[in-house]
Length: 113
Length: 113
Image (cartoon, rainbow over all chains, first blue to last red; front, side, top):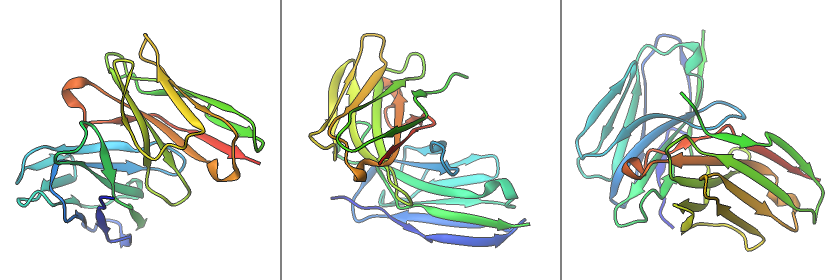
């Protein structure tokens, strides 16, 4: 099946540092979304991207829809302890069923105070 | 703002028993999705419903069935439970105009013993 390659798998950073993670695929996507999940809870939608090249911010978070439509990245600036969690990218496949999302394997973020 | 409601939050069943999980979508959302998430895994799409009709099917076992009712709530029925069915089960909802923007509920943790 279709796969999203999300990297890095985990990150351990100092509070205040900037963070960058990305998702790539060999397939073209109509939509890219980024979610954050805390342990035992449901993923929370952070940012949704709909156009190639689109750059969208949500507070300290910035995400971009790659020009080739095969990748996306998420940046977190000035990380704080509550940024800890697992970040998932998800893509809506071009030509796929409406609303059918494919998830990456996640990036686990740990922040050292 | 109202969120997706799932019940129960925790469920313990024995092998070969049945379980029913319920999901109440965000008001005015007409599409419901069910996901299964094993430990350390990304959410795996099971099935979705739009306007009470099944709209897409993923890796849902034949032992599982689901439906969406006239008030848009959905139920996931699981029979002949196996140890491997132990997981977090999430429901997500979206509106027609924002089909890819799926909002997840808090999940039901199912433990099969």
